[in-house]
Length: 237
Image (cartoon, rainbow, N blue to C red; front, side, top):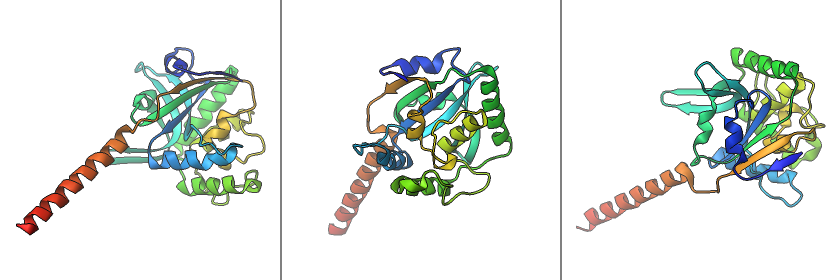
């Protein structure tokens, strides 16, 4: 594996030929991102948190001119929630307030392998495979008990895959094992980042930052304090 740090990932996200051969990884600031990154410290011999909390498959450029990905994710929009395998534009990851690290893994796949990945991914989209928080908890348990990693997820559900389990599932369908010895439903984004098969990794670190969520927390605390101060003034008068 050759690791290319710096701003290479930004260019890799836009390259016209990157589609469908590559896997994306992200790290973020939300509570679930931080919980996953912290749990993955069990995979590091120095106990360091992982950079990665989400994984997805590049689908390629569509007729709308945008690059799209296939992923299993928790997508919250106004009046609409999608929990499971879905297609999204890659532009969702351009928000540096939410995503502090990005990576693109190029495995140099053959066309038949690429076709299998996309076909199997779209099949899961059509069948509405769910994102399972329950299975994610099962994986967190296995991280604390390594002897469970090669066994079936202790909280497995049918027709359910969280993000990195989804990517591992697709690659095994194409005859490629990104995390040998680890059950598909116990696979983490960090496992994928350490895949033993030859590949090139492009990494972009944006810095930790507070992000939009932290800024929102700060604004909410200020409003609460201002409200309390106002109420105290009203009572004293």
